[in-house]
Image (cartoon, rainbow, N blue to C red; front, top):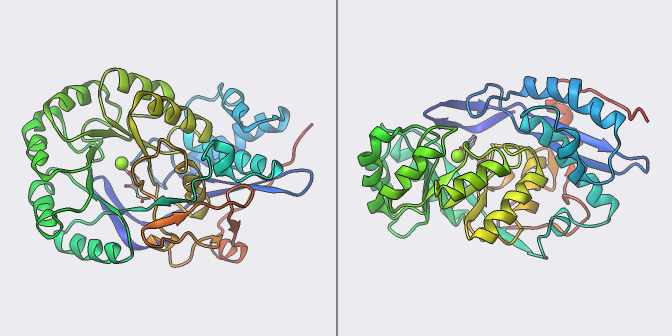
Length: 359
Ligand code: OSB
Ligand code: MG
């Protein structure tokens, strides 16, 4: 599906997106939905749409076919023999959660422990390579009610870029995401950003580093948030113990599913580390899972959860995710609370695979 506007980072440009939609149907005909959020190329993590599809069809589905489970929490153990491939695992695991919530007639939010939060704050990412385009996008997102803006930065687009945005928006909550564009040699460049009172700087250093971020955090007053570096609960625990960050961006796909995401949330909540829910330029199914996750009490900062219309002319779910007065409603219906828009899905469908339980 083409994006409305190209999503530009120093690592590359996303103009269109492929995705994997999972429908898991039980004996009573209830359907649970999941989404695989890997990109077409491995620029953000090592997985791609086609490596995910390979791992899902050749390894993960056979495990599910031969070992039916009672609760979605058991998927982690079942998938343990398959190393990493977290986005592939999450595609199935999130479908299990939705299906289980529907079987239990509970909203996914309540089932995960959302405690009845009715709405969550929306945040949006501006990913452009010009300050004037960024400023006009920010203008329109603020009109749409977004409460927090994230911008992408790198060594050729940082101090002056943020200064210009700050000049127009002195009080706006802004965070900056570097997607690993810097090294410790850039310490002075990064420290210079402290004057802009950013909410945080996301993943300034190596995509798999937690050691050097701890060194940098000691030098900077701006809180560091880790994204790419945290792919497991153990990563989160080590980063917190080493004081590599004060904030963690939790993405369901990156950490292998909702169970692991919740474990990281629970741990950070207990330790007083702030978390927020990250985005993957996703379609509506993953967006719906993010809304349920972000209803948990530790999600104290608006995440990268925007409306369906932020990226898509028409999403593949119904109703679409909308933002009103800066907030997104948390559905109370069983499961994720959104249905597939099968007409839209069929317009964009590339291939379809079906599997049956073996036992
Ligand atoms: O680093 O958070 C990131 C999108 C794709 C890959 C990585 C990242 C992003 C975003 C979130 O910044 C975009 C969104 O879905 O709102
Ligand atoms: Mg990021």
